[in-house]
Length: 193
Image (cartoon, rainbow, N blue to C red; front, top):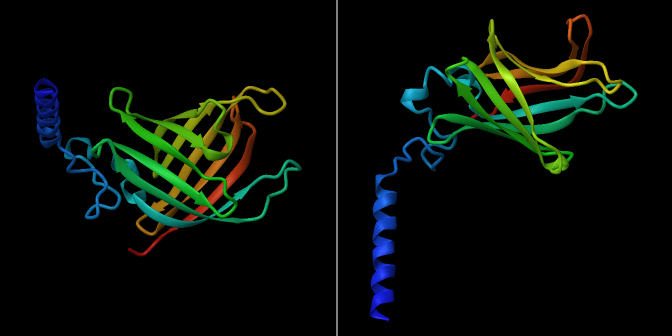
């Protein structure tokens, strides 16, 4: 029994010492509700810096008949994760269709890699969009066939980015860019903290 007690005490000591050497300075906390960017990642994560925080948004999707559906109230929150080296967003929608993404900047390619998850379609393979800043917008793309089988890509664009909010649009675009079909629009205003 003494041997077991000694092993447990040593394991606890090692665990506590390991925790005390891990720097969590940039994680979400009561003082940092959205975390903070790690100084070594500041330049890499600058594109999304004005978007960090919580917004009240209006979301509208296309119906199957190509008309626009009803506008849905939504909260969209962005925060720093991985100790300030990546960004996570989460949405909460009045229609119960919640979703989120993890966004990592890849310095070697100077592009964002964004993985999207949806609570309403858990069984499918998460989508991955890649892209970056084009002018003042953030543009992300993923190869995607149209419902009729045509080759093309999904394009997601953040525009009108400011400390007051931003707009977002999801579009399907043909390979040559001659056909663009918007399928989702979101308009966001920052919540007052």
